[in-house]
Structure formats: structure tokens, C-alpha cells
Amino acid sequence: MTDRTALSAPILELPHTSWDFEAPETSEIIDTLEAGNVLFFPNLKFDLTETEAALLGPELVDPKRKNISFNVEKDQLRGVVDPANEPVIKALLERYYQSTKALVETLLPNYTGHLIEPVNSLRVHEIAKWQDKNSWRKDDTRLHVDAFPSRPIHGNRILRIFNNINPHGVPRSWRVGESFETLAKRVLPGLKPYSPMASWIQDKLHITKSRRTHYDHLMLAMHDAMKADLEYQKNGVQWDVDFFPGATWVCYADQVPHAAMSGQYMLEQTYLIDVNGLKNPELAPLKVLERLTGEALL
Image (cartoon, rainbow, N blue to C red):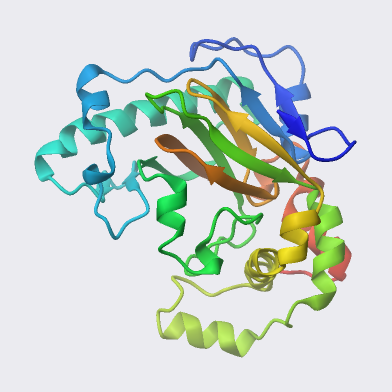
């Protein structure tokens, strides 16, 4: 882990080596996570079977897709080229979902019963090769906070749990940025104003899956403004961190500025969490943006 600045990186390293967790005695972990830090488990490996490992390769996924995704609640798997491989991949992603759910419910007990719309993915593309095919808005090697252009989330949090399953010893290299509030104070004045009419039209034309709220507008505008600012990308407050194979890391991707610079083969589990399910809701991007703008954003 290399600091680009003299400040401390927003990373909390944890010693767990097994997915069979013990409940923490204090609330330090959830407080640290909700404050905008990354929880880093350098030795929390997720094992693949020989059959699963043998399937790893870019040819496993539809070349037009960024990853293979599995919607647990709908039992819906997407992106596997050969249907014959679907049972193995579905079993892998189901097992990863169960492992991450156990992690959250044990280490972050406040979230039990608040995990919404669980979807996970298997990413097999090499980052550099995949990014070459996309526009700057989809370039995840640029620092950004997560926001969904077509799927408004109405203030819910985006909790993501990553695991590097690279079989060749290659790290997943990230950049991690400054605090969300510091970022928002700088970026907000330059964002275009919210248009309720435009939001209504996008919803009616099914450009978005539901109405884009003022909050969703600001988050998406921040995402785009960050990626478009090349000076910020080069010289903004940030740290380099390598997540080696066998490592797990957890963060609120809507709060932590992050960029995936290089690597290949990763599992990722996403949960949405209602702000009311947080231990410290005042730290959520929704509450920070409402405080800074002086407006209700939902």
C-alpha cells in the first residue's frame, strides 16, 4: 500500500482469515465503514473448486458485457456465453452471496434485515483491455463515486464486497480518494441544476427504470464531473492500494472515491441499504448533500 500524500489512507486492515466470523465486541468496524473507509481483509480468501477455476477466462462471458451477473432474488444469471457452464457459475455466485451475507450480518449486525436487492458478479476481463472499449464515462480507471445512470436508487446506499480470485498472483490495483464531504463541497457548485421535468420524461420514455430524484441527479453529475476532470484525476488527494489474490475488501462505493487501475478475475457482491438501516445515517451521501444544499433531495 503506497501513500500518494502525507495523509493516512482511509483503509482499516482486519485480520480475519475465515468466512466463519465471530461477532465484534465493539461498533468500530461499522463506524469506520460508514465514515467512508475501506475495510481490508488481506487474508480472507474465497476458494474456487477445480471446475470453477478451470472455467476462468474472458471467453466465459459475452464479449459485449462487462461481467457475468447473478440476481439472487430473481434467480437470474446473465452473461455466460455457453449455457452448459451456467450451473457451475450460478453455484459459484450463490456461494459467494451466502458468504458475503454471513460477513455482513456478523461483522455489521445493524444491517441484518436491511440488505436490499442483492446482485453479484464475476469479472473476468483484464481491466486495461475492457476500458479501451468504453467512453470516459464508463472508464473505471478514473476516480469516481458510484451512481447508476438508468437505475435511480433514491438515497439507498451501495455496499460492495470484493474478492480477488486471480489464479496468477496478479493484484487488483485501486486508487482511493478523499472524504465524500470534502469532494462534494468542491464539486457541487459546478453541477447543472436538477430538472424535475427532465426526470419525468426520462421515466416515461423508460430511459430510467424509475424517476430520477434530485439526489440521483447530483450523484450521477458528481460521478461524471469527477471522471471528466483530468487535473483532479492526476493531482487530487488519493492513495494507491493493491489487493492481492485472496484479499477481500468492503466499501460504500457511493461514498468512497475509487478507481480500478489494473487486474483480472474478481468477485463482487452489491447490496443496497436504506439510509434508515445505518448506524450513522448522518454520514450517508444523501444526508451530506442535503446539509450542503439546504434542500430535501428525495
